[in-house]
Length: 463
Ligand SMILES: Cc1cc2nc3c(=O)[nH]c(=O)nc-3n(C[C@H](O)[C@H](O)[C@H](O)COP(=O)(O)OP(=O)(O)OC[C@H]3O[C@@H](n4cnc5c(N)ncnc54)[C@H](O)[C@@H]3O)c2cc1C
Image (tube, rainbow, N blue to C red; front, side, top):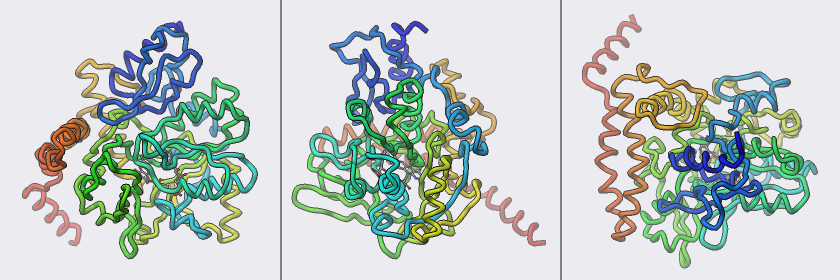
């Protein structure tokens, strides 16, 4: 493809179609016309910089994780790990799979889950395998969080916890280009895919980014997700200064966590978010549309992927437990050694157990995605190519409706929150969302006939 037309094509397909995740990779290439800005719904998005020309000679199409010209996760994974690892259809090329937590220092206390994210980043620094860590930390100024480079264990520790918040990498990639050194980066699956795509055509980035740590991902949220928690606790979005999305609550299930809201004059620890409005990730409030067209749940192109062990055998421990998928042998060796030293408390689990820990995510990004792709094709709209094939008849009418309502919930949440902000009442948001939430929840109700059938089946099984 003539590179003159690449920016225009990216703009006309991914960006105008609403599939941009705002990762910023397209803004990092020479002559890129793109800049990353918040849109009206507080999502970071690539936008054509008005001072630059769209026809600029920038090679962006094979970098964007949602373009149809870039390699997919299978292709990238095979190049990186195909010779050494086993291919799993949902986890990518795997070396080994674990559930567990960190048994030293404050990693587990400070982490969202078992503390493995900050531990592996610190271990890479301690082992002198990297000089800097690129991760997401609280920020001063007009954003709550941004990608930052840490150089010490203390600085890495300050970045612990999950940021369900828009972030972009263009600025930090610029810093890596300017400052030689060896780095590890942590990111969501599509962000790590972007880094792999950039590294495959940029020798400086390829030499400097030595390790990619992936976070398992349900979906990314706009900044209004943070505002929603703060506002419910009496802190207006304009006054919100910091938020811990994963404040652990002792003696509860790990899934029963709170949020810690900080404003100028106070810190508030909320009740468990499950008791607040909007905590159900299935509702998908403030979700980027791009996330509904992603088929990588665990970060298949990362050297190691880390998530929560949402499994009955681990969830009762309020301190949090990770699921871990290892792909890189060097990381595998670090982990084996730490297990022997009892610095990590890890159980070997099967790949299927990891999949089970993310069953809702896989259901949404396999069966659900197939249906969403079908709808786009039916309407003759452009959409990214996926490893999942479009289909409709694998879902009952009720399950199709559930998927449609999920899209509606995400779309309307952006609009409804804007309206609530305009009139200055959080209740307006709830008023607008409640009817769709109600219809969505109806799709989970079991009919009387189904109840009877289930009961008869149970009796027959007992006989
Ligand atoms: C948007 C989002 C959605 C997620 N969805 C799921 C899910 O569906 N299922 C699941 O099991 N896990 C999910 N996770 C991962 C989970 O929340 C934890 O981050 C993970 O289990 C690691 O916990 P930890 O205690 O090991 O890491 P910690 O020790 O807390 O370290 C986390 C590291 O990740 C970095 N980080 C935090 N947020 C981001 C971000 N947005 N982008 C890049 N780096 C970041 C931090 O700076 C820190 O270095 C999600 C995370 C995010 C950010």
